[in-house]
Image (cartoon, rainbow, N blue to C red; front, side, top):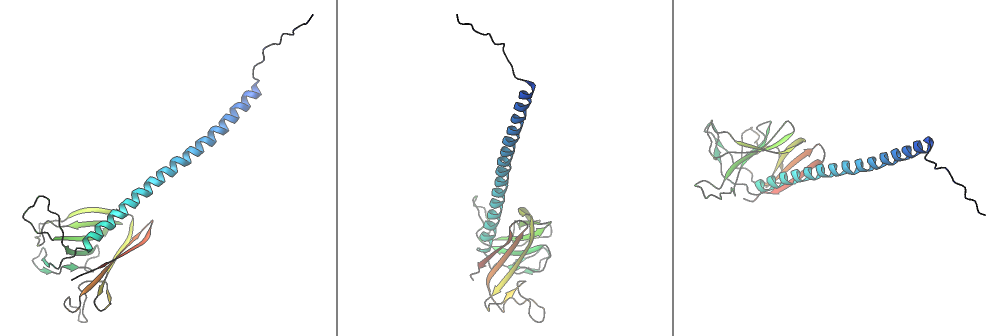
Length: 207
């Protein structure tokens, strides 16, 4: 006769439960760390892409403006004649100039030339433009922020004698503006960003 021995049911011991909980905690921590890295990398990628788009859009604005320079002089808010390009006179204003190609989708009775300027203040590069070329003291420019975290910005002008100038019109030996002595051949625009370093663009100027 065969006898079967009945075994008592046996559950997990406390030690086994503690080991299982510890293993689960370690695996959870590893999984969370991996997920956290993925999320951080994704966020950093998004920030980098947004920064890249901002820089590209800024350089596009600059390129469009400088490749459409106009010879149109203006009268400033005091009624004084002002050269089509002014630079090196103001600590904040990098350059002020006239440019063509102003869009007019509504076909309004206005000039296709626009007066624009670039300035840097509090590490922010902004673009200014005026509603009219010859302005009054009450006329204020429209300002749009282009790029933040700008360490510095500078501009140089190359004349037809292959000499660089930090201001335009260049100053003669007597300290008077002498815009008729030389012609402008190119403009070098430099941006120094806190994260990207120096960005340099050179635009040829055609008369």
